[in-house]
Image (cartoon, rainbow, N blue to C red; front, side):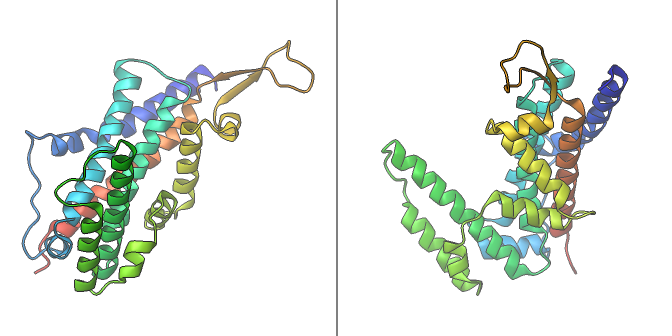
Amino acid sequence: MTPDEERRAFAEIFRYLDRIEPWLQRIDPDGPRSVVRERSQMSRDDRETDPYQMSQAAWHALSHAVDHLHCMRTLLRDAKQMHMYAPYSIARAALENAAAAVWLLAPDDRKERILRRLRFAVLDIRAGEEARQLVSAPAGPKTGAVRLEQVRALAVRATVDEKAVLRERVKYSEIVKKAGDTMPGGNLSFLITWKMCSGIAHGDLWTTLNVLNLEELPGGLPDIAHLKITANVKTLMFAVGFAVAMTTAGWRLYDERCQPRY
């Protein structure tokens, strides 16, 4: 990239990131609180998923997305640091969490929303149990088995597929794909962005070779590339843009589900 192209890419990144201001106020514990209104879709979803309330799960995911976007802005604009790899990991976390909120809230069919919420709860319960067992920590007041049975009972009460709730493990590839299906232009841009950012977070070579700036240097061994690797502001611009777009969709859905229907 030329210096002018890089400056324009940074300007676009900051234009995206400045959209987070009202979201920062929303997740501030001392800021204005959102209310799930009675007779709204969210209030009924919360009743049918309690204590794994839909509104709490969606809010939790959105607050994670906003926090990571704020971290990105702090790193790039305030600290004026552009790392080669780390910003993509931050963008990935923002996109994944925003996609989780959209995935939970997007279906118009209530049973599908409840099914997704309960599957998401099972994912969290099992991950927590795996961590507890690794450090041989004592179980809490409710064991993992008790909590899973509680989720199963909620599925039965809501007449959703209990086998799907307990056996179909949620993967973020599914979450990002189905959330992307709801966006203008479809899921492809979101999926490839997520895979790109995930690959860099994992240190995958294919992403280094395809996402970052590479300059071949003299002096390498025969048949082995000797490369100078630097950050690519343009690819990061796209990652931030898609993460912000998904977060915008998540807040819109959250507010729509919280409004009374009659």
